[in-house]
Amino acid sequence: MMASELQKPIKKNRGFYVKMRILHKGRQPEKSLFFRYYQWILWFSFTLYFLTSFFITNKPIQLSKPRASGSKLSLPSRVLFESVNKTSQQPYFKNPAMFKDLKIFIYELPSEYNENWLSSKRCSNHLFASEVAIHRALLNADDFRTFDPKEADFLFVPVYVSCNFSTVNGFPTIVHARSLLFSAIQFITKNYPFWNRSQGFDHIFVASHDYGACFHAMEDRAIDNGIPEFLMNSILLQTFGVNYKHPCQDVENVLIPPYISPESIRKTLEKAPLTGNRDIMVFFRGKMEVHPKNVSGKFYSKRVRTEIWRRYKADRRFYLQRHRFTGYQSEITRSGFCLCPLGWAPWSPRLVESVALGCVPVIIADGIRLPFSSAVKWSEISLTVAEREVGKLGQILEHVAATNLSTIQKNLWDPAVRRALLFNDHMQRRDATWQILTSLYKKLNRSYRRSRVPSQ
Image (tube, rainbow, N blue to C red; front, top):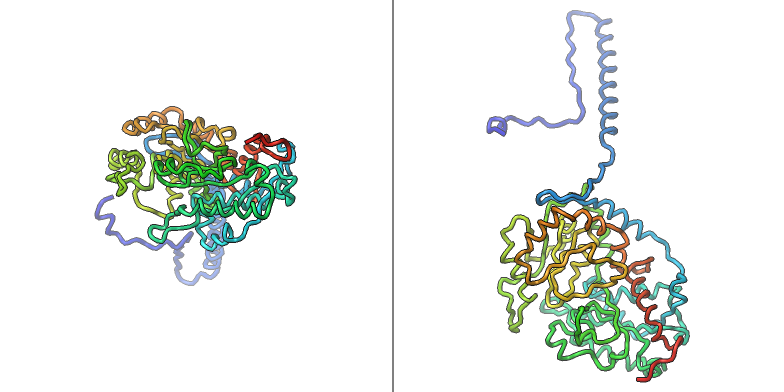
């Protein structure tokens, strides 16, 4: 645009407006009346024409097919939003035949073990909040819950250990976890006979922390501490899992996803552009240390995130941000690939957020074990890049974008995939709590009601 054109005054747009000038010569009342009549007819015709054209040309926009072209990717975000709404409105269901009347008893513990912690709103919404979400879902699952512990297959112990937030950095601190859990078991032992009859063999706890039942954020300390002896016979629902031998999963366990609020997902998709164009090729927002060795002498993320920042911070294909932003989920809806590198632990809430918001997760965490593998075909909806291959990340993603990205996205956008990773206050068919019950059903050999407990 030329500079002279920029200097022209801009007329205000007053909408659809037809300006007509009628010239009169002398007194011609008949002619004037005719022209006035003609003017109104013409004005009405133009108005009808514009209105008709507006409604015809403003039909719902057809959603584009998945494609990769340069750094622009596209996704039907509205389809994801509509499927979330449809899922959230599903009615509660009866205990299906596949569970064969699976029954769970929920201990009623004093409020200091759970309810009191909810005074902080973060308790039920942060990444460790699956301990709250599972408790709520089971409380509302009338067809699975029993109030008679004698007819229960499993007994759930609702203790919230991750809602003690540090006043220094705001992060959850779990230094009190062991003592709080041990105190809960003492209460159960004193008031009920069911722990002693099996030594907790049919009891369920949630350990939704970095290294699960080892209750520590640092791996070396978690390994040194190990799993508390009083939990070694029980079933742990935990977010930590690897596909090799590790002391922090050396217990009967069910691998669960980290908690992401389904309401936040719904709101984000509701605000997403109708066309769903993805103008960010590769996205990551989070902690990326320039100098990964922290004050404790340990290397954060095994230097992986530092390497990502050093290599790709100036790469236009990558949108990397080191600072927090409350609206970061909207950035995920704009992205084709979302990096999910390890932090202190291998798992990350980004994994669930990426899947739920339709961004292909790129998992960079050697040996990680992923939740609900029978319901979520991870190899078909995500990419796995070895930690040592971070230097080739750009090349790898360019190749995928040019070859089979549309196939991965098609698998990713299946509503059943997202549903399996989200917890709801009222359990829905095949959601995350449903997947937990499916896993527990496979452990009915631990049910005291159905079979004798093996000798310890």
